[in-house]
Length: 286
Image (cartoon, rainbow, N blue to C red; front, top):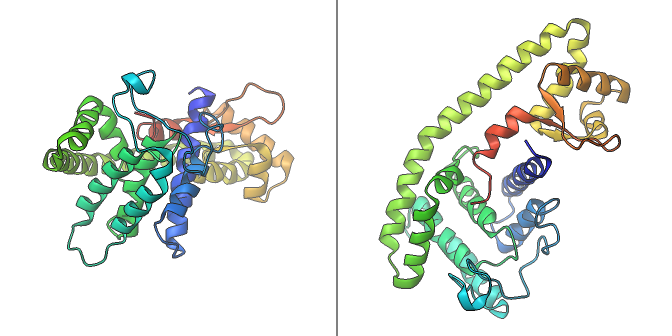
């Protein structure tokens, strides 16, 4: 997997983990939290120069090469704060009787229509779905990979967003969204089983390392928790010495579990590549 793709997936996972951790701690699902999530998402790599964590202060557009031939032009920057405040009020409307899945579907369209950031709106908009469902207790873990469904049906997804904006056909969008939830819920179980099988098989391979197995297993567990790390980060996470971690990483490389992805001699970054490949199915930009 190319280094840029690995960084993007890692950012996506870090953004989702940050959002869920904040919600667990009682922080409200709010514009402030969405800005924090955006900051994590664009912390490194593509879009890192596009004001991470801040609402846009210039006009953007969707499709086309300029405003004049754009497929859709979101609200002007001076209206972004008010539009996002309205979206926040909608998310927190009490006793409206609206099912959570319908609320998530409507909120996603509103977010994508506002397009409040210079970059990363599609990814944050899809993260918003997961955070809404988690905050409402519908999901206990982020196992609903709706992003993959939207990518598979990209043309229809964009068409329905445009139809809502042009003619208010919310029913067609809801049919599409809810069908996606149904399909994705089934595939999420399969994805979870694939990850568990991967972890089980790779752990069994680590245990074949004999005397080196103990240190390698500690590093393997750290990569399973966060599949992208430097040697210094792994040293901090495992509590092992730097030489022990370096030997363990070398052993994991020899097994094909870990892979150095920068090609550099210094500040090298190691990835649990097969784990990231599975995660990448649901986190790529549309």
